[in-house]
Image 1 (cartoon, helix red, strand yellow):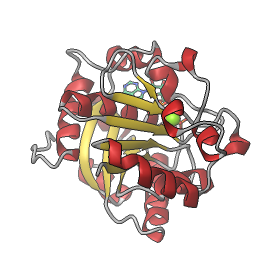
Image 2 (cartoon, protein in one colour):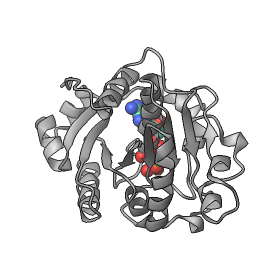
Image 3 (cartoon, helix red, strand yellow):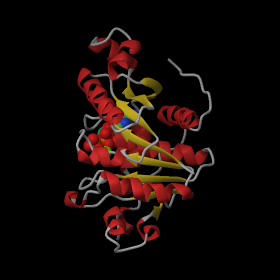
Image 4 (cartoon, protein in one colour):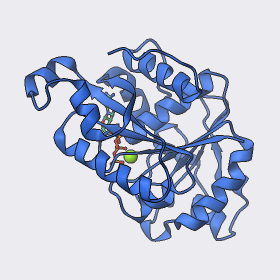
Length: 244
Ligand SMILES: Nc1ncnc2c1ncn2[C@@H]1O[C@H](COP(=O)(O)OP(=O)(O)OP(=O)(O)O)[C@@H](O)[C@H]1O
Ligand SMILES: [Mg+2]
């Protein structure tokens, strides 16, 4: 039975989708079969990042309304074997309810080692639907006070729906900028504000993430890839020391 992880943040634009796509590829490199479910209805982006947007016919709403069997709406990433995507509906009005998401993911998790669920921004019903089937959550934050407030809010919401295993990824980290901004004295303070234990830090790395913008997998000799590989190992239960 696969492990189901929701990737969320509260505030938009912190890098949830990028981290989800990157972790998907990193988990595959560890020998896993991985499904990414895009729950950002109306704004879906994982299909673009995995280079399958030109092929989409069905999405998650088609499965739910009985227009197609689940396998027809799950697309293999061409460049990463064993990485698959289930796209979000292109119309936000087709957003899936939390109850239906739980039923669907309950069936799908038999076929994968990991399911990663990419959330929309905010703490509305779309985030609740994405989170309800999850065993655990990963909060993606930057080191600005507003994104950390978003994390704290979403963590409370997750707690209310029974998800107590919440870990933090600090994304787009640049040590020099962090010191210059001076909003926090150190990373411990950032972690306290987010209210979740640290899972890893992904540095700002335009070269690595621009691959996703072109539909290419986030892989190769990049510092963000190194960080994502270590985070993927931790998601697999391997005790990899944090590099702080
Ligand atoms: N580690 C990184 N280094 C450099 N740029 C990054 C990194 N992570 C994400 N980005 C950039 O940040 C922007 C937002 O990323 P992304 O779309 O993944 O965020 P999101 O949280 O999914 O946004 P939304 O809330 O709108 O869904 C993108 O331009 C992406 O390329
Ligand atoms: Mg996104």
